[in-house]
Image 1 (tube, rainbow, N blue to C red):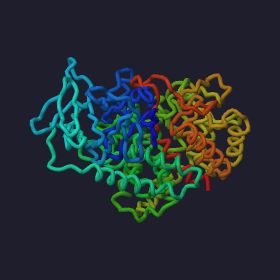
Image 2 (cartoon, helix red, strand yellow):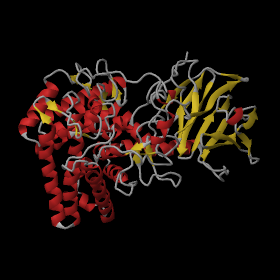
Image 3 (cartoon, helix red, strand yellow):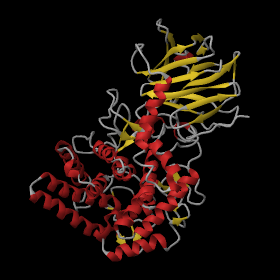
Image 4 (tube, rainbow, N blue to C red):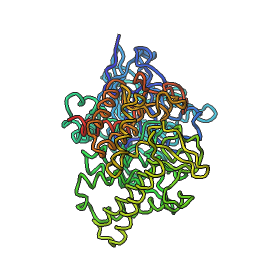
Amino acid sequence: MLIGKTFIDPLEMPFSRRGSYISLANSNGGSNQFGKAQLFIATSRIGGGALLGTMDAESPFRQVRVELVRNGIPCNCVISTTPYELALESEYGSVRFCIGDFKYLRCVGRDNLSVRFTPKSGMFGMGGIADLYDGTIKASFGNGFLQFVPIAGTLTQNGFSLEISPDKDGVVELVAEEWLIDPKKRDDYLSYDECVARVKADFDGFAEKFVPSLPEKYKDIGLKAAWTVWGLTVIPDGETVYKRQMVKMMRLIFEGAFSWQQGMHAFFLAKNPDFAWEVLLSSFDVQDEHGRVADSLAFSGAGVASMKPPVQGLGLLWQMENFDISKKPREELEFLYDGLEKWTNFYLNFRDVDHDGIFENQNAGETGWEDGSYQRLGFPLACPDMNAYLVLQEEALAKLGRILGKDEAVNAAWEQKSKDTVAKIVDMFWTEDGWVAVNVITKERSEPTSLPLYCVLVLGKRLPQHVIDRSVELIFDSGEYDTKYGLASEKLSSQWFHHGWCSGSIGTPVQALIALGLEYCGRVDLAKRVAVKYLDTLIDFGLYHIHNPFDGTQEYQTPMFFREESMFLSGWTAGCCLFFAEHYTK
């Protein structure tokens, strides 16, 4: 019986490559066991905030079923992968697939097997297949088409399926190219070997920035993390809204590049400094007339009706502390200053209803911690961590302004405002029992049970030492947050604990922001403790962005968005993994 050998299991993350919207996936909730593996060509041209209106709809992801066929009968198969290729393997032979060009998938088989492609039925049960009379056939593919181009073998249509049968030498070769408009056959295509060589050069060059310097223990997970980030990286291609490279969150469910994640990738991915700089800039490519940064960018639109926390200042300060950004092109520095200033002023102008210099969020989504226990207070809701991020943006504006030679009175004003806000944060949100949130209308204060509020520690030594010391004591000495697998996002004994996203589970941004905060507070020992525990969890249970605080397994292994039975690996988590392994384990 065959057993698939996978670098990345398509059940963990569909197989793709940087810049491509073609993916190869196993069935929803499927198996790679012999006889159960099912391969689909999938489209990633979905996602972002647009998903939220169709959470319960059938997944539009898997579009074309792929089967190996011998003597007219589909073969039992398994799926194997390397970083560069996917193989569909049977007892009678295999066919290999590679996404060598961003726009097309190429496959080759040399074992006298046919390959059958069955597109998802279109409207009224029609298959959406059309012969283009140039030797190629097109089929519906999400909101576009796949053009099937035979290179070796004979391509035919049988009902609602296409099948390529071997030539006299037992060979099949085919290109499946994605089109958003009517397909037009190219004059030339890369050979299969050229496709593999191109992917290998691209990924190996990316991974070389991160993996070789990692301690041996983390090289394997580091390579998978690098592949995850690389595979979820989008590039400007003239067909999308992307103006720069960005890192998407994950396949299908959150198939968008979220702005606050780009702010964190600015330090997560700093071993590739040019890339990290580019994703930081990308946060400001879409802002509305008030300066609000788009929550997420999907391939064809922006989530402009929502937003996420302003962590871009944190990312910029990290860049300024670790690199000489004065050498960056002036137009990029001016673009960043302009975007950051508008983003900061948005909060000051539109999210401070009582005009006390502390801003409030108006809904749970704006906090990034959508099910945090303190959300029960209602809105407008003021939180210490949110205002800490704005402090860092104000400070970053002062420092970047000085690099650019801005009016020193303006720079000094931003600097003073950041210091004043720190004092207000401590006065409003700190209690000896821990950090709390406040509803500014009812004046009700949350119970001090939610760890995301402790991300205020990113202020580091700007906070009073006694506040730092007591915060550390509450996190690590109570036994309520510090689990074997990482930091739980809610006190384990809290009446509000229910796993969730940030109401008890172990999530990526909590680990990242708390670890960085501890480092800035002078507790590198504890930052390393957080990082190593989390890395061990990722090694043992996968690069998922939510883990169970009691056994480390992936949370949400039940049908939810798009009726998917589990989430896929996360680019957010993979970036954090690379940062933790590089920054805290040496």
